[in-house]
Image 1 (cartoon, helix red, strand yellow):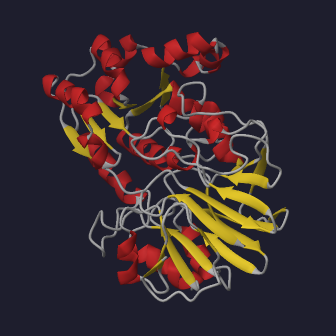
Image 2: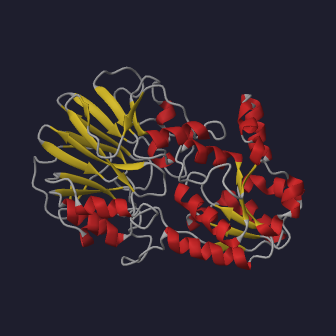
Image 3: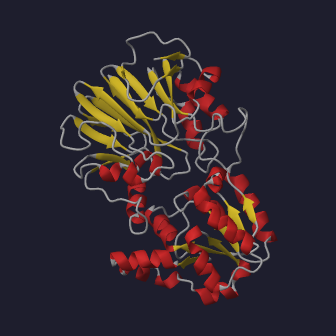
Length: 424
């Protein structure tokens, strides 16, 4: 078995890893690099990405975040895609609203700890806790070697017990661990992040203290966060107003334990930009399916002080016309780095003009160092390769058997010795 990391050895996002065994190949993720436009980024130089090649058996998508699947729409439509059912349904639901959604023509469903055989490969997915719904790590076995790909994971979300389960019952005899390190260099090494339960308490405090509308800006695909916000709404007595895109994502999860249209206090608002997209694509049955739970500007204005509304920057005109922003507060629940980007300067100016305070309430979708150590210790790999990190050199300070690779290199796991910190 040999491996080539096309993108991800020295960056977060854009992950793409090619594995070959017995003349056959699979690819792990096909992500869009952070801060890149879809049209600007070419596909990695993988045979089968731009034309037929029967040696490419499939592309595995670990979870529905753009930096792991974002270039998939550029693949030939017949390309086999390995993806979780929930992740597939979310991306297909999103395709009605946003360019980054997609529909699939040829899928192989992955399930927790259920092996799949593709040619010489045996692939075993492991469901993990992450800010994306239906996220998986993956064990790859071929030619007597075992590679474990962590994907993106954490242990402080609503599914944190999945990490406990993995480290308690890990796969054995791992030759190579490809492990993400998103948080290294971003925070103190001993930092522990708030749990979603911690955030729920904080959201409840904020909802009880805000006089007017509580606006919450979070990802419409961060299901854990949507559950957190909804639960805090119910405890505070406020109604939960989701945009139609987010309502469609929640419905697509097909999980009766998640907040859904029809649950108490769950309302749906159709912003102007989403309405225009529906009209353009002639998806008129979609708003009709949510008709019983729709809320309109007049009611939003009257009930602003007992509402929590999910916010998108594109909704500024909607909210202005609804005249519902007196004593409003925007709660920002995403990575703080986004607010430093130039594209959000108009939003910050708008908040200042409207005298709307911005409050930060968030936790990372990625594992801090203590949880990275837990996983590495449990798997005890012969070789640990950093991926999904801007500072892979930091791994050498905290882990054993670290080998730092570069993008574009083919390498074979067990053909050389691998002292800690060796770069090849």
